[in-house]
Image (cartoon, rainbow, N blue to C red):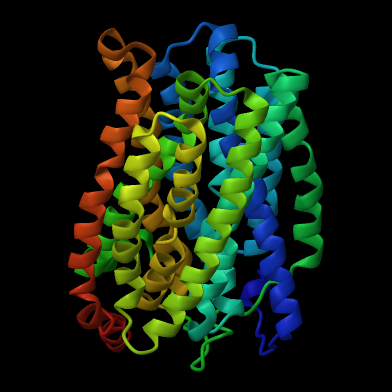
Length: 434
């Protein structure tokens, strides 16, 4: 009998719950170090392997995203039934080894295959982690916990920038992949040996439901929720800008502002780590507080932050001096992904406890296929198409076009909020019909 199916009534101490959140946070940090490091290595890899911007956009986008999203749903189905901490540990081992193998690539094809392996391994990260966090933390603290977990994004990206930038400065791009890939295997051992599998629904007053749902049932239920459908697409379009910028801002700073890789890595590392982390923590805490009065705040927060974000994004891209542009980018980084924790919390509030990992995976499928797949690819493609008109400045206008997508996300977040209260009643009807 799998561990999580054994009769358990235990509740872990607040200190142990925080420890588990800390371990999951570290796993997510490594997830984004290994995922993001490629962006600061784009130009040296492009030069050595003779690739175009369109090809590098494919490498940072669809080559990773298709397999990451495609494997995410069956792995999430496994996580809704199996031992989640072991699934995460296995995935961490796979993506860490494949990251190290990127450093051995002798051609664009070799590197693409290794990146596909990273994507498959990382598919085992977030959906099981989201499900664990929702069992360790009650609904009134869940958005904050998920936002703390999501800080792994800016911290991981920051460390990826720093490691990649300075490794290229002193060694080469191959060494950077070795340095960030190998330690993840050690963390996988810690994850497997020290994190305990909680009972399903442990944090809920009513306890876990025992009903098991197929992928088709979960997808059909989610499709019936207008708030979820609009929220998922809004999150995907918002992430299109985030992933497009995450992959191509380092080359933008190098090409347009003439900055070196070490300088770019330092600036981007500090701004991403501090700005992104502060934005996610503060937003998660505010969302939890406001959602006690009205659950629609989990969705409204995404629209509100985009409204503040947008003028700073325009300033970053159009300012001609490097320092003012980089200072503007601090706000862009602080607000660029703050919708994520509240969006996951809203998704979990809309479904039953046995649907959570799959619901997270469906949300991430839409988000990553649109954002991670299209974002970097669109910027790379536009770079090559606009180069005859704007030369080295083409990347400035490519990022500007992709950045405009945030306005559509704002509208969709507002539309999603209109259906939240009605859709929150749907899971109760589901239980009654079962």
